Image (cartoon, rainbow, N blue to C red; front, side):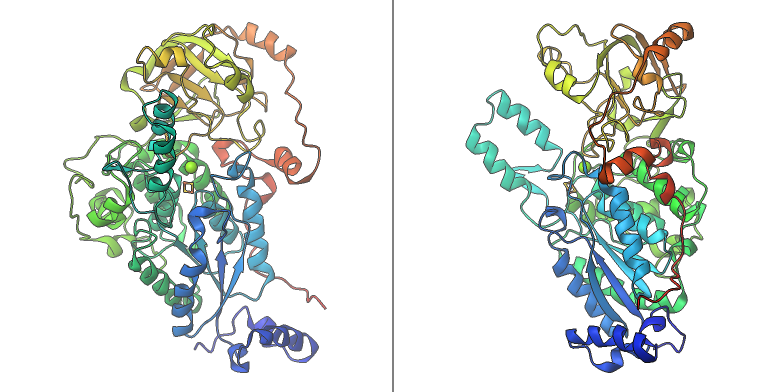
Length: 571
Ligand code: FES
Ligand code: MG
């Protein structure tokens, strides 16, 4: 045990009435008195919830973390925070990411904690916990819950990406009702989060490449015993991190963020990565801008063959070598001297990590694509930028000019998209308004809106789509996303009308609305934002303070950190 005075000593080491209160009530949990003699106190910040199915096993996994903490001489204290599940929460879990980050930040700061283990899994549970921890900046390590086992249905491997296919097949009678129901159980047959390279796997890879977790965190299946070993080791390690004062700000340099951008390109990670990484960078104060995702990501080859763009699932990714094998391949691309949670550099942790299956993880000499990553486009439709995941788009649509078919909001889209009288053909550009941070509110994952039925019936599989929303990490298509400023904030997207010509030129990073500025000026003068019916509560606060997508869609007053000090006693 360290002789150093810990943050928690300011609570448990106190004499008199205050110290009595801090210790006495903890003793109702049966802790012997010497637990409060200066041991590092480690919080386990848990997003376990039966309403977040992807994280429902995290109570159990926390026991493995605790074993490691006890073993290393720490005192583990587990606490819950609001948990965000993608599947049940309406209108979109993203609306609450910033709220959870506030819960996490204040829970850590207000309590006698010296270090914290962040337990997350489903999409938003990772960025919300990391953002909150960054704004306190005491030693922190992430333990992800891990992906589900690969789904098996009718002799085929399946994952979240197949949900949309099953729904289409059921609609046209290729699957009957019983088969459709059976597919549900076949898809989600074990604990864990989505088993494709969707947002949850992207986030687990992000923390591993940033150095906020132990190596190997991203891919070990949730139910593989080695996930518990990683949790156990993370418990041991956080106690040492407290002694070493290895805080998030000591790990999260600009170089660490640039590394994460490159790794994300190599794994074909979700576009949601952008808004989450930007928000984390702005909490910790590392300089990062939207163009960095293009600048550093686009030179990186695509090294993994995982759905939604490729063929395999996370389980096969783990067996093939997981993220360490990818990072080892990328050595020449990465800043190699970045310290990580285990005290070693990213390069030292991963050098020589083996690849066991070149169908799943390619070498840099023979990649699945020469250039991966995300392209940032600009133009009068998106002066602050919009993004497109080119690996998930159709090559022939990356250069395109076509007339806009405009949906004024998501209800308008649902009401008209399958209307046989909708004036649309495959050259049309589908434009969806008011699905951004303020507009939806919460920047929903509707940006890869489904194509009109009559176009699908002709066998067309992709069209250009533009919105201020996001796209599910499990989806694909030629979708321009995260348009900033968003339509609700008065961006030109709000002014687009049916038939306006739109020019797309990804090579030259351009997205242009071909309408004279004079006409746009007139439309702007006639424009009023739609009226929201949220006049109170968190959602009102969110709408008033959320920043635009290119800044990470955090709330303006949450950017930055307040440190871990609390001067006043409670009694
Ligand atoms: Fe939780 Fe996909 S629904 S990760
Ligand atoms: Mg998702």
